[in-house]
Structures are given as structure tokens and as C-alpha cells.
Length: 124
Length: 110
Image (tube, rainbow over all chains, first blue to last red; front, side, top):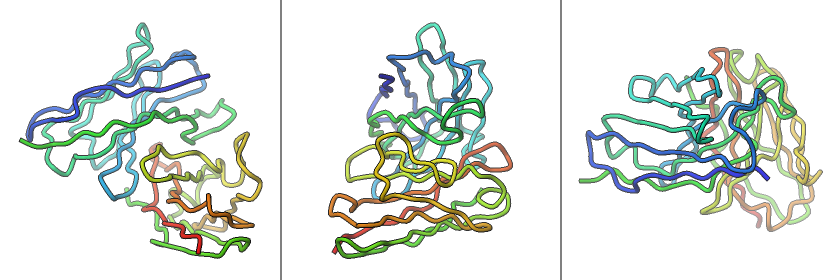
């Protein structure tokens, strides 16, 4: 059964870069059927899509975050990663990674498998 | 891109039916049959309940159903149960090949 697990620092200083990794187990990140995405949720607030990546490296980003976001993939490690630069307190959130079905998948353009989420706090 | 519009809260009694709306534009909800719905209990990751407007993933109760008319999608939960109390989010594919979520709706089972 496919599982996703986020990892990374729980505390980041303002103006620094937030870095998280999502490890995919029980399946291959190189499947042609899926994109892999990052979603975040500030405390007490709603979900915000950050961006998604295909195993080939093709990416799509939320326009409101695009200037600060980089998502990359490492197929040899079955992982994909998020970097968010110049963070402020507004970036404090639970960060989730999730699988997004591509057009050839059974479940298309929906996040069908999620990691448990990791809380990242931006504070000095 | 702007978040999809959902009511902040809805409520219903056990056994009743409720409907949550999700309003977007012709560039997202209205333009594609790629609307999905997620259920989130406190402290938990979201769970996919409906995909491609009206399809249920394996294991999701048939009490959950989805539909769409124009730029507005809807999630209906029939035979409301206490365990349905949660936050619900809609999401849509967009013309920019991005994803956008709704602001979320808190469902209270009275």
C-alpha cells in the first residue's frame, strides 16, 4: 500500500528557507499516472495548494507562491522535496505531501493519498 | 488564482441530508469535470471523498454524492451521522493547469 511521509525541520527562522522532503513507499514515484504535490494548512485555516511535480521534473506552482517555491524530485530515492524561501510567520502551517492523479490515472486531478503532515513554525 | 467559495458552516440533525456548495468560475469549476471533495477531521490529514465531480473512491460511503451545475459544485451527505462531523473542502483543476481549494466548510451534526 502506497504511503507518503513528510520530513524536515519543525522550526525555521524568518527570512530563511523552509525545506521538506516527502518519501514515497510501497510504490514508485516514477509512475506515469501521477503528479506529486505539496499542500499546506495554517493553524485554524483552510488548505492551500503549493505546487506539484511529475517524475520527469515538470512542475506547476501556485501563482501566489511561485517566486519563492521550488519543488524537485529524486527518483533514485523515491522522494520529492519542497523549498520555500524568505519565509515569514505567515508560512507557519502543517505541510502535507500528496499524490495527484494525472490524466491517465483512474482518479484524475484529485489528491487520493496524503501524508500525515508535518508542522513547520517560522519563528526566531 | 482565487480560492473557491464555500459556506463557512452548515449543520444538520442525524438522519437528515445536507448540501455544501462550492462556487468557482468558468476557468476552474465550470470549465472542467475535475472537482474533488475532501473530509478532514481535527488533527488528521484530509481524505478524498469525491473525485471528478461525482465519483466515489473505493471505501467511501454511498451516502456521499457530488454534482455540478455551471460554476457551482455541490457535495450532498444523506443520512447524516455523528461521524460525518468534520471540515469539508472542495478543489478544482484550473485552466492554468494548477489546483485550487475552497475555503472549507465546517459541518456540525446537531
